[in-house]
Image (cartoon, rainbow, N blue to C red; front, side, top):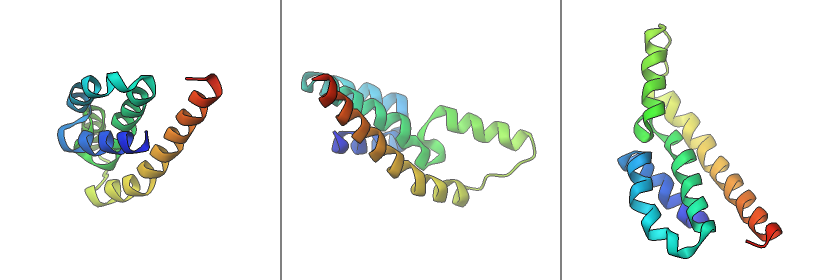
Length: 104
């Protein structure tokens, strides 16, 4: 599941999170709900690595600039690199634990 989430996170940063979902979900449905949920975690946490990872991040950047604040690319990327992988791992481990606890 961690590999699926990581692939989804990388793909979300390359082509944006919505197209990544559209590409990956048909490929993972046969593997079961755990795989689908791992992909959804990846495409939701992964885009925090880059400005272009999700539409929400691009809109956030636009709004913050309209209010005369700066959030430079280097600062955003550094924070993303420090937090997104850790959050992705914690979320997938929590998913794995909940699936095992619930028998899924």
